[in-house]
Length: 271
Image 1 (tube, one colour):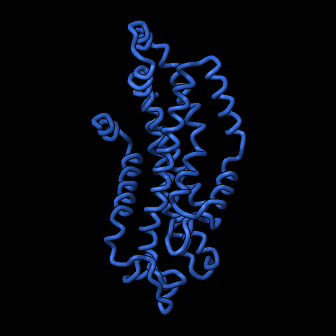
Image 2: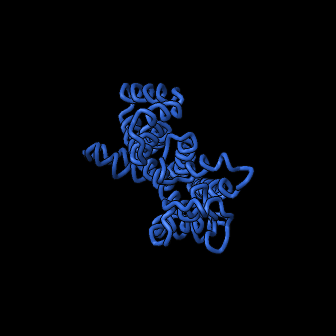
Image 3: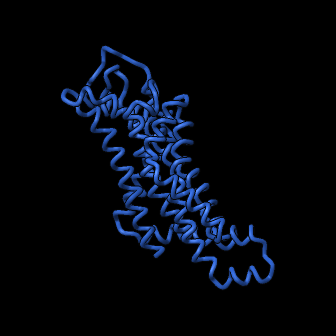
């Protein structure tokens, strides 16, 4: 934690702003229920009202408060982004460390499986599985997480091949330290910074994937909202009520940009 604070203090203004923006979005998502309007109750007489003092983001075609829907959409989009990356990073790290540490036939078999999986267009598989399974944010998280671990595995393997040749790992082997302890205490600890960078970038990718699924009607379903589903619903009103697309589009853009800025800076720090 102290190291992160030190890095943050010496980071450029763009990184500090990115962290602040993400913290605002995360706090808003967590506290969304405190907002007096829920974004679900309809009021047709108040439909498609532009932003005003009563509805700061305006209302949608069913008269629902658009700011409330954006708040709850933040909860869905950020949850998918973060939780799916937790799954993919954990799985990819485990596979990559096993492959890199044992090497030989184990490494060859695992990497060939990873290569095969990476050669398959994952987005289309995600589309098919998501369409086949019961709609729900839990399924979206699992599907995205289980189809995005391969790149993490390759990265973890490459880092493991480097770390396992260091003197303290060799010494640990000589004195009889268990393989499990070496992989967790010596290897995993030393590749965490690299995995953190990958996870930061992958969060942005997962949010875009969720937004794409929701935009295609295969993500979060009505009456719930995500930023992607809000964009989908705004399509038919682009000419008359462009704010319906502008607000969720800007939120997706800012979130993805902030994660990428932080990831790029952290990558430079650990090199």
